[in-house]
Image 1 (cartoon, one colour):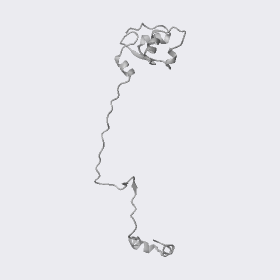
Image 2: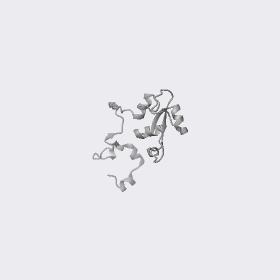
Image 3: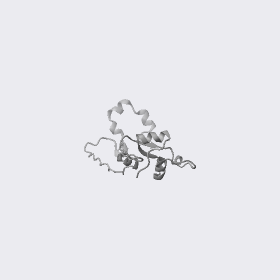
Image 4: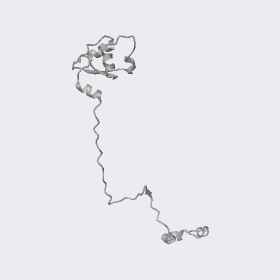
Length: 134
């Protein structure tokens, strides 16, 4: 242990002569560790990467309906698009006549409907689309 008196008598030449002699044998060597792992390079360390577990999630219903590539109102198979509504509550307005597409969406309880471009244009124009065929 170095006292204040020793520090005053400690000269620069003495510090360069034998730095290891000043440390006592009981002192613990200081090693930087990160969670029990020494921070110095380990040349013989084996690197083992675990293979990630692949999880196959089932396809979403909308994806399956799109891949079917058929209009859900008229059963055409060309130029398929998806019609969306903001809320399911918008479909159930009392006192109004519900078109075929509204009934189809309300029956499925879905905010999306896969339709062909002609039916999609009819829906946005406010006209009744082709009749629902099942």
